[in-house]
Amino acid sequence: MTDAVGQPGAEEQRPGVEGARERQRRWRLVLGGAADESLGAAAAGKDGAMDAAMAALYDAAEPGSSGQRSGGLGSSAPKVARWLGDIREYFPSTVVQVMQADAIERLDLTRLLLEPEMLAAVEPDVHLVGTLLSLNRVMPDATKEAARQVVRTVVEQLERRITQRTRSAVSGALNRAARIVRPRHADIDWDRTIRANLKHYQPDHGTLIPERLIGYGRRSTAVQRDVVLCVDQSGSMASSVVFAGVFAAVLASMRSLRTSLVVFDTAVVDLTEQLSDPVEVLFGTQLGGGTDINRALAYSQQLITRPRDSILVLISDLYEGGVREEMLRRVAEMTAAGVQVVVLLALSDEGAPSYDHENAAALAALGVPAFACTPDAFPELMAAAIEQRDLMAFAAAK
Image (cartoon, one colour):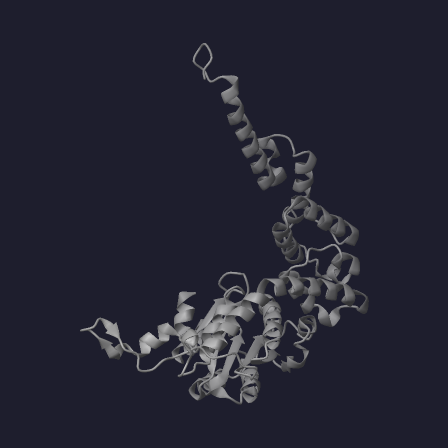
């Protein structure tokens, strides 16, 4: 529609004008107060509150810088608590978690997390749990109960996310791995039966005559696989420690598996006895410190009594502070004995981690894959290991 002089009518002008205003509003929120001169007056109302919350964090001077910037939360616990409440009101949970993590890093709020009222205000997430676990040794008794509640909330969230999928994948793999050679018709694994009998194909008849049937095994209450999770608890592995602790508890709840959890830095701690309570497992870790992978593997090797029915999962960035040659020798010994060994450079939702490329290449030369794994892919990884599939191919597909 046009008016008498051929210009767009008011009805057509309005969407374009409103769209431009919305774009200007969004850019103003992204750029902050520095854009007041070019984009107009400061944000007001709810936009003003959102802008102030972001300015307090992202317009604050970087630690050690001399920049004169207007933001910041200072060291006031009440002010920080109000800020935490504001961001929970104005932003979705996923954004709140990112802003909390940034605040802890940029504004050095670690000390304030030792105060119970602060823990009551935060949004629980994996990164916050990692930070709390790193403070475990210096945390006052008055704060520990609040910290445990934060950790328990996150553990329960993770259990809802991973438990059913892990049990389903692992149980299915155990059933498929326990094959029988005289199966009933309903138990025949046709895919493996056909593959095993391809040499008996009859071209004249266009059919295959199976001489050997392969079937799925029946469920058994006996322990079918031994699993050892060996987890690096150096500071860079915080998220991986949290996920590994919860996965270990889930695996330990399955009777067909014998699950052990070993955590290490320069010392080794066996947390297997605490696996009935993942919160206790996590509080049994001591995030931070050095790394002695060789010592941890030496201990884990002693736990393996049935090499061909055992899976060792080493979760580490492979920055070895111990004896590298001994570490590689132990891995070679275990793989030669039939142990399924896999190295996870990270077990988290983050992207590619920093890791020792030289050690990863040396392990790959031994036939041991080393790759980052998301929690959602971990059940499939365990299923592949139980079925003794090619883990190098599994790693390449990831």
